[in-house]
Image 1 (tube, rainbow, N blue to C red):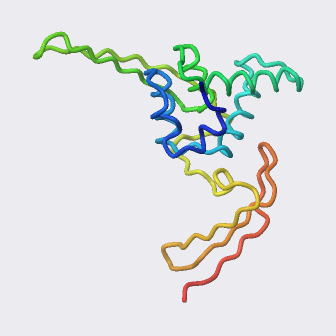
Image 2 (image 1 turned 30 degrees about the horizontal axis):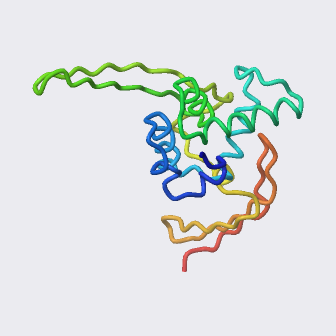
Length: 176
């Protein structure tokens, strides 16, 4: 019996230890190693539902159904390759490489690799661009960052609008 996807995300190992299916285990390891939280999953599902290539109609019933079905598929104890690809689109990486290593004899193995582009990025997206604070901190959370010069910057995220996140307070305290 599989857990609810959001409950799965609260587990320290994201449910890796609860499945023996190799594809489900691989996907859950990606969740675990990238520290996907329920908040992050909520942001990812919005992007997934809005992505035109996923062909999800823009009405509340269809979107709710698509969200529920995807979460159910991603939390299942067994996963098909097509569901794994859906899960990867949900995670929104730039690309994915699959490596298959076959050990033919004790001294001979072959490795076969394919690369797949997964996501389309918003205009201006640069993979090398560092994330802005408001991209990774949930609404209502305050953070303090100490810079190299010793100054401290305190931020509070007050509102999050899709595509227009805003920082309400930014206070810098000079180095002592």
